Structure formats: C-alpha cells, structure tokens
Image 1: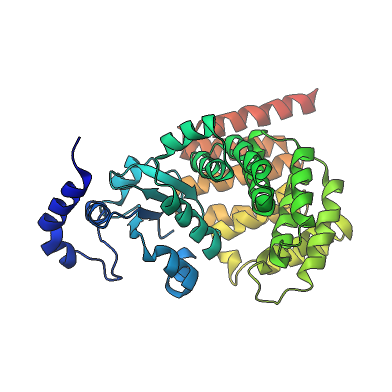
Image 2: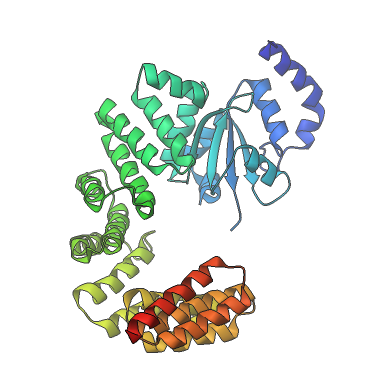
Length: 54
Length: 340
C-alpha cells in the first residue's frame, strides 16, 4: 500500500506551481483533480457542491 | 440560495474553513463527468470525500447554513467511508452513524430508507428529535407519490413538527401547505383544513417579505376554494399570483389552466387560455403538452370527442411519446363509457 503522506507530499510538489494559477477566482480549486490533490496535500476533507444554474 | 449565503454567512465560512471546497457546475466543463462519477441525480447535491475521492458523507438540498455546517462537521469528525459507516452501524449503532446513513440513502432517493435511519437516530438520541422529525416528515412527503407512507403516518410526524417549539413560523406555513397537499392527494381534503387554518394563523405573524410569502398566497387561494367556497375569489387570487403579462406566456397559461383543471373550476376560460398557449408555443413538444392539458379540460367538461381530437393533435406532433397514446386510450374509454 502506498504511503498516503509521502504520496501527498509528492503530489503537492508536482502540482504546486500551476495549482495556484488554476485556482478559481474565489480562492477555491478550479478542477476536481486539483481539489483532490489539495485534499491529499493538506490532509483535509474535500466538499463538493454539485449545482446547476437552472 | 447556497451560493448567495456562502458569501455572506459566517456559519458557512467557518464550516468551509478547514476543508477543501469545490464547486461543480454540472452542465459545464468537467462538471457532467464528475457528476456522473458520483452518480449525482439532483441539484444541489453535496459530497464530502476523502483524499482518495471516496464519499464519507453526502446529502441533498440546501437547508440553511446550520444544516450545511452540521453535515460538513460530520464529515470532518468521522472520515470513515460511507461503506465503513454502514458496517459500523450494523455492529454498533449510534445516532451520528444513523444520520450519516439517512443522508446517504436520501441522496440515492431512497426515501423509505432515509425515514428508517432518521427514526433510528431519533430513538438513539432524543435530544436531536426535532431535527430528525422534521427530516422524517420531509422525506415522507417526497416519498408520498410512490405510496410508501400512509396519510396517517405522515400526519403523525407532521403534527409532531407543528407541536415543536423549535418550528419557526415560516416552517409552520410550509408544513401546513405540505399537509394540505397530502390530504388532497389522499382524497381527504377535510383533513387538510385544520392545517390550512394553522398555516394562515402562522402567516399572520410573518413579515410580507417572508420566504414563505408565495406559499401564504397559495394558502389564501386554497382557503377561498375549500373553506369559503368562493370560486371567483380563488380564481382571482390565483391569477394574482402570476407575473405581469402571463397571458402572453404559454408556460404560464398552461400553469393556470392546469390549476383550473386540478380544482375543477373556471374550465371554460381555462380551455380558451390553453388554446392560446397552443397557438403561442414555439416548440412542438411544448405545444403537444399544452394540447394534452386542453384534452384533459375537454374531458372534464364532458366533451370526450374534443378530448380525443386534441390528444390526436399531440400525437401528430410527438408520435414517439407513449404517454400521449395512453391518454388517447383513456379518452376513448371515457367516450365508450359515455355512449354506454
């Protein structure tokens, strides 16, 4: 089994540069993959709001 | 509503301070694919997932900042997956687990399952009885169309909500309207009258711009119809609920005509208005739906031949729609019965 802490750190290093650029205007992550990477990196739960503009 | 309150509510800001938060527009960009991955069926739906993307909580609908914050707190407090929570509940039931599982199955539209878990949570932790009972009633209401609950079962839970000191005036209005709707659906309109009266009594103490304002206007229409037996007043109040220039909007015309049909009132004008909607409609599918309304109104006015003619027009426009063919069979059977 992969070490989740190490994997999180590696992901953070790999994504760190463009993650900031890809951040949504409100400061939240802009994509699912980016949000999951942040959740791993920061050891936090990811809350997803599925909505439409109807 | 969530988007608006997320910017202004300190409760929501605090709840989101220690989680990663992602907004997914299910109609744009990667949204449809992510929604499909989580089998999202309605909006809004919320998922709290762990670092592997596995759900630890999920819930449907936005029920205010406090309820949202409670759900996020539950996800942070216990990061076991929902699968693990189901296993844990089987061996050592707790109110927290029951609430997580209630929200889980409700997200899959399993209303009976949600009610079962909320009842277990209420038994396991009576201090949460008010919240649990409110949810039990709400999910019973959602499941009412499937016949999953009897009227008396729903009435019992609805009365518990009304009896609770924690129930706000606006909630009393909404619950009264729901109970009235259930009573009429179960062909027990007389059982709905006390709720109608209770709803209007609660409404009297609310400001005009209350979130329940539209429901209150609907209750006044029902009061005119069911209690005062004043059809003209009810029709007038119902029309007043429609936006300006509604008589030029096919969708609004259909809305009003359908209300007339449902209540069996003002059918002559309703027929004229729905035929105007048919003329104004630009989309063939919409026109077919309005012709179906017209056909139902004709049937209720005793004109089976005209009902058949209207639904045949709908079938010409939408030949693949099985529903219209079923409607045709229904109208033909009514005509056969009429001819004896």
